[in-house]
Amino acid sequence: MANIVIIGTQWGDEGKGKIVDLLAEYADMVVRFQGGNNAGHTMVVNGEKFISHLVPSGILQKKTCIIGNGVVVDPKVLLDEIDYLKEKGVTVDPDKLMICEKAHVIMPYHKNIDVASESMKGKNRIGTTGRGIGPCYDDKVSRRGIRFAELVDPEVFRERLLSVLPEKNFILEKYLSCEALDAESIIKEYSSYSKRLAPYVANISVVIHRAMKEGKHVLFEGAQGTHLDIDHGTYPYVTSSNTVAGNACCGSGVGPKEITGIVGIVKAYTTRVGEGPFPAELLDETGDYMQKKGDEFGATTGRKRRCGWLDMVLLRNAARLNSLTGLAITKLDVLGGLKTLKICTGYEYNGKLLRDFPASLKVLSTCKPVYEEMPGWDEDISGIRSLKELPKTTRNYLRKIEKLAEISINIVSVGPGRDETIMIKNPLKSKGQRGKGTGHKAKKG
Ligand code: GDP
Ligand code: IMO
Ligand code: MG
Image 1 (cartoon, rainbow, N blue to C red):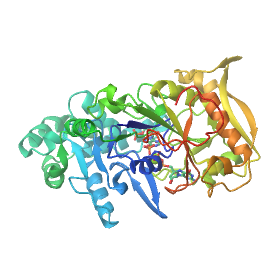
Image 2 (tube, helix red, strand yellow):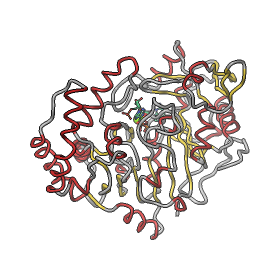
Image 3 (tube, helix red, strand yellow):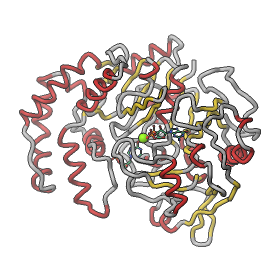
Image 4 (spheres, rainbow, N blue to C red):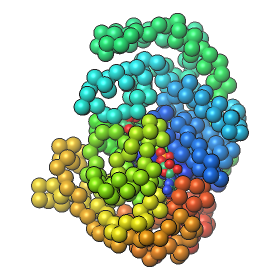
């Protein structure tokens, strides 16, 4: 039995969707445990591109897909996604997709408050996706939320909505200068969603537990990335959930003992969407090169992603915070054509070398990245399927990452397609397909 958490190590968009889709072939079930439709996970299969915001990325491999209690769900977005997948010939019936009855529902006022409060903040905005994620988690924590258990019960839904709406309308009208919302039209709209989604609602902790007891393999699909975590990220420039591996348990109703491995997804360079500190950011032609060659546009909002060098301060932080047991390096092909590559190994702060990620944004904003340089490669590596065929400089880059992170690389991705992959050690296979590895003896993994 292998129950593996797949987690982003940077600021999101590391390629989690691709790796989850790839590994789902060897799993029985894929579980999302946090975030909502702020996520945009891309899968490319036989040249066809699928973007999923809520449905776990195991759906194309026809695996049981579960939306856990830790996820905040916009029912309209979920229904649109189910329809979009069906149009593409992918079955999304209630035996393939389940939503936890304890998952919170994103309401219209969450979206309106998210957008209006961001625009009110002006230059201090977070740069949220505007999908109502933060306001929905606010209500969850302050015990004003509405869960699927309430959504599917018309009487209870009405009662809960009528009890929270006056306060929401007060904020919308008096503080954010927006229009108030009408209770009856929300009830009408959401009861139509409820009717369609009710068959998908289940006690997913019980469903996952049963599968684990039967020896099935479960993948837990993280959204966002470690440095967008509400506790451990670059607060307040973060999302509103815990994105680290520990939350796979809380967000799906599974005990920590069940997890057998944690794979950290690492983009071969770094990107970030929205505001917030980014020490290794490149505001020059190299950053533009990565942005263009990597097609770095947000899968949810279409915003241009900021780009920079690989930052090992981030990666070491992620390794510790998530107990990573293996790495998947993605978008390695994008670095081809750069004469010299840099890896950030520490930050210089007030003449001192910081090797650990600081919590204070004031400190972080004055940190200067310290780089190690390495020669790059010119070859197009996207057609390569084994480590030994990679150019020597590419292998050296991978070895350097393993050495600095002290974690073994399990997977190297050289293109967006499912098959554009070098599998070194499949974390879902006990004996694995381990080749010779990169040649570096990492401590873990
Ligand atoms: P996620 O949010 O972590 O699932 O990542 P996104 O899907 O938002 O962004 C990753 C983008 O990179 C998508 O467009 C993927 O199709 C693409 N991608 C993933 N792996 C690779 C790779 O190895 N090489 C290239 N060139 N693109 C990749
Ligand atoms: P995936 O799963 C990249 C960022 C937003 C913003 C901050 C807060 O595709 O990697 P929110 O709407 O969550 O309140 O926005 O978090 N953000 C992401 N950045 N990838 C994501 O998801 C993200 N989800 C949220 O850009 O800076
Ligand atoms: Mg994404």
